[in-house]
Image (cartoon, rainbow, N blue to C red; front, top):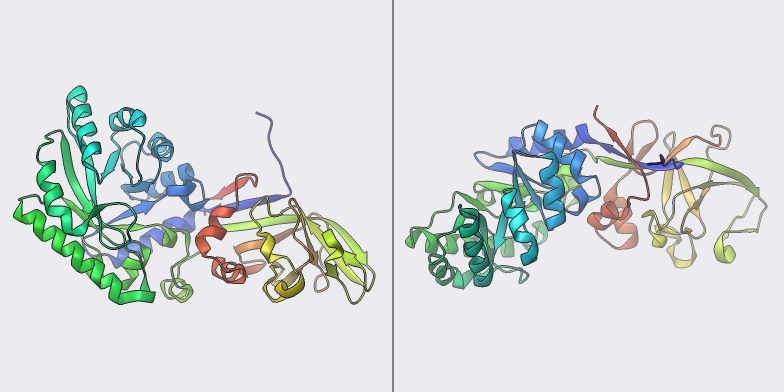
Length: 382
């Protein structure tokens, strides 16, 4: 393969992800930590992230698709891989042969797995998903007992876990507690049927941070592994470290005369002689177009960093490039120098995912997963 080199890239600090996992693990009593590495580990790279966490002692991993399960199993041969999303029947056999644990919430799927177990000569492991109020996937919480009774007909299906997913975080504690009460009711019904799965889990990152009452036997930590929490102030309290940093080299500098426009639509106007730099990262790479410095969005425009000084975006973000006001660093910066676009770098500064998300009215998850594979990854271990 011909090597790809671009003057823009994403740095992934695997050491920070491991330290974040360790911080969460210390918060737990007897519960185990399950690393949520779906969506290509939230854009960080499922293979290197999972391998690093596995070396650090993490033994549970959660994904959403069959492809992710196979990619994960290729690098983590001895860990437990749980597939949280639905799966096409044509993919079930290969996944089961690789020891993937399935999420179960329909009788039809239980029947499929039971038939498969006979062909494999061993039971297929599942975790029963209960819908306690999110109204997405899962058995309705008040029907969990009846569903469990019907599951008794399928000897080839081994229910080793039961779980639900929290619909809210700290912004709605009463509903979180309601979901927990419903989950407890389901567990009580299971005990009456002498069905006591080894693993009970309810907490995501927000649930872990709320109370140990939500921890049970397993907790599923996703966003927090990568240094971000459902509320921005929580990251600082836990001393979490954002693991992703987006950088781009300065490729061009032009001095723009007063009252001239910059970029498409000449939307970026300068009031004085201004050094305008170009970096090769744009909305096709994940730098959201809404971060452009235009019209009513001027207050929400992106700001890059160099040497601890802010470099505001000028004009509209292009598909492949964007413009930066270099006025504050004109005497210090040269073409080829790296500039921080997103994330944390001790030499340049910090632009948190929450800061960027608030500017464009979204959530950190979208910003984080938006920096696609067109930007090459550089993995840093220490």
